[in-house]
Length: 131
Image (tube, rainbow, N blue to C red):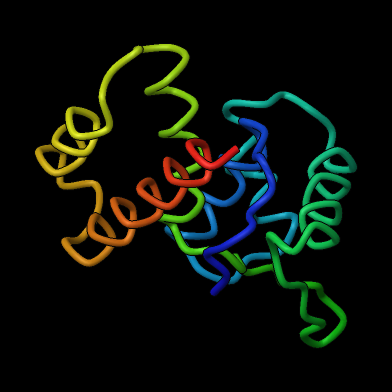
């Protein structure tokens, strides 16, 4: 899975990825049925969103007996790093260590995923300082 050079994610893209991280390969219909609880949009909007995500390299699309199945091409920590950096810096105005401690306490990530998230956030911070 890709971990570097991930484009910024919209909330909807992150939500699609989150479904796929939890459930694995899914069709547009399966994702749409779940995401419809949050986004009351048409099936075609879900399909367009997922096709664009595939074009951006966020998802991989495979034809399985005439049905396209999508799977994430970025790890959960890599995708979360984009959101965590934005949220910590601009919304909470908190230090990364505090945010990482919240993730550790929540048990939403495995220790390996938490370590990957921490490393990715450090890379993001280093990029920001070198600009």
